[in-house]
Image (cartoon, rainbow, N blue to C red):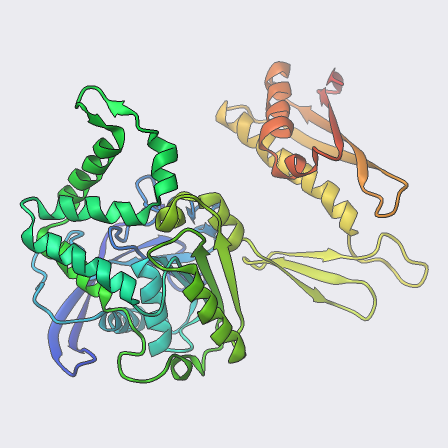
Length: 458
């Protein structure tokens, strides 16, 4: 769901240098559940992004939305516009001498005005990830989960060098915003990414290489989105990232953090280096702060956090297990708090209270394929009156006893053409069902379909 742009006024705002800004207006959007009804996730946008994080035109719509990894049916999702980003701004003072830490403090003040004392999670990519670190440094208990993506808690020399060159282009070029963007795209991606995509092909209409046409397109697109003042201001904010700017060490800044931190790196990122994320992870672990460092594997470099949405989705999907009793009963829960009980298949000593791991695998086949089938039928405006599925598994006799054959029986009733059901089921098992696709190399999966009691597919 795409929400309207909202405004919040922060008055007498004192930045970290001690200077007071009489008033500054923040704009933001809310997606999903109303504030106060669900856990809140704050998404901090990237340099060329804005608060439109979800919905039809949302820049991260594959990650934030209904039934997405950040599920707007379960969470309240807020995204503030970084001041100066030019998104529906009319009278912003670009001469303000503020840094990214000041923006972080401003966001915290805005959350307080919205009566949000603690977040479920903060996440963001690139400058949005840097901003996530800045907010954590100011308020160590701000969120249960901290998820910076393709970012760092400080601007290193390589980033400062690139923002310096960006600034020179913005000051001296005849087409500053477009030319700066063209330069930026060459280090947001990688040589392999561009070589593999364009392969020295040409745009015959323009008489130039397709890679040049692509760069020109991005330059024109950003020029339409950003004013020169806005782009220069955001570039300055990016290079100002440093949670230790006041002289305190990184260890001192994070010593009271109780949040779970998930650092997401891109293995080919030459903008925010994965080696530095590894070093940060090691420091956090040595300070007994719960942390994981997830690696996105991609040829696309820094921009992989916007491109590799399947890998991002997998990282956001976590399963937790807790032992319930002194036997074999465990409780599994996902990030959204939904729970499943797992137990032994049978026991002569006590009453089994959950499904076995192998039964859960069969349930996964049933659930995954059924979601696909119903979704495909709904798109054709076909609604079964009843829907039932039975899944049987035949296992090998060798140790480990993997499934060698799984047979699915589907019963559907209603006025639905048989060929539509057969095609929907075939699309699921042969193409879409992730569980079935994970099993297909080692397990024969067959399915039968009954329509109104009659076998139509064996």
